Image (cartoon, rainbow, N blue to C red; front, side, top):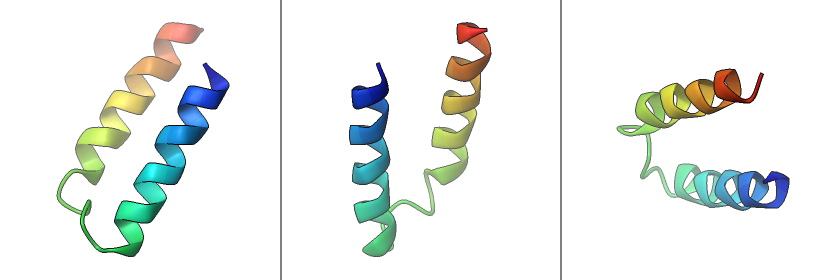
Length: 40
């Protein structure tokens, strides 16, 4: 799961560098926090 997460993180980072994912950043953050809460 950690590898998967880091892959997603690097993809997000690349998108951010191109300025593409500001519009979906909130959505991604919400989904990530939901996943984190589910793990506990």
